[in-house]
Image 1: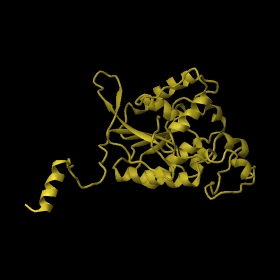
Image 2 (image 1 turned 180 degrees about the vertical axis):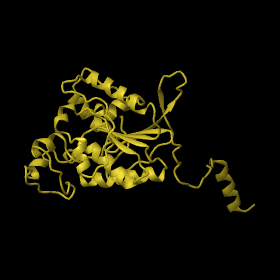
Image 3 (image 1 turned 45 degrees about the horizontal axis):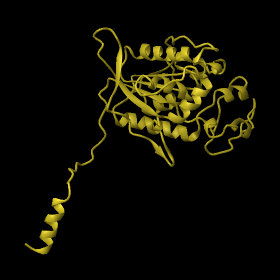
Image 4 (image 1 turned 30 degrees about the vertical axis):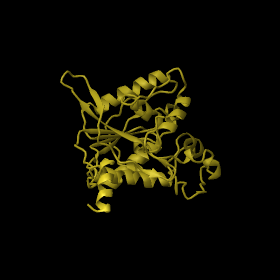
Length: 284
């Protein structure tokens, strides 16, 4: 036996060899999944004073950064409305289309998109549906999915969205959440809305604000909602843990007894990573 062969044999004895498998395409969705997703990044998340920088008033808007929205739909009291209900930024628009492409690649085209009524959530839903095309189900605005009830009076209505070219389903939505609701009541409302909306549909996509995302996630992840805290403080916590377009996939199990139960599935959308951050949920 040569010196080289002897050396190779000794190395083999001291190593554990792994099995290598060729990387294939990501697995397709089965078709009974439910995807819950946070809306795309809004412009105020990177520029808290964006309306001031943009010199926004009833007849003026100056995009001051290439990531600022190129244009803004006209609405009543532009400054107040957009401070309370900001749009997504240009990067968020691109990222929404990337997520839509992932949905197509994974055969996870939604049968319906449920979204809260804030502008960012509806914009995200519209961009995803527009990218996918006619195969995508309708967008249904559901007020009870929202935690932004203090801004509800400035939200666009379905007719306004239709005039902007957004295809919104005209089915009656869940009841709107009124102002002044406590955090614990809000948590119960959103959980109830989740179960009600998903009880009879498969392959639904739910797009919501960050706090609503955290509340729904608490049904599946080890997420603690501080009911003795305020809505605003819990929203700050949710922004840290649930970045733009963060998502998870669940599916309905059981059901023979009439009780709706859900569980996480091992099939999930691939992450979307930018320089310095990702859309993956961070519960640390």
